[in-house]
Length: 81
Image (cartoon, rainbow, N blue to C red; front, side, top):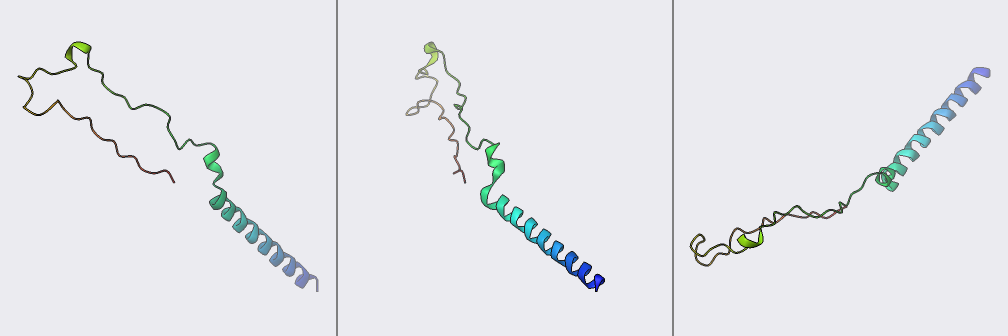
């Protein structure tokens, strides 16, 4: 009788512990508490090389006709989830 009661208590505690662990895991996935401490957005300007005022316009003899100099590279922006 005592052995059956002890076995039943162990089973009950294992079930309660399993449901608790499952609840914590689901809570972590749903609420994502680590995002409270991690910045996803960066609030900085992209670095850019500013040309001196005297060299802002390239001389026509140095560049090919129809071009105004090298184009700035485009930086792809991915959406934040």
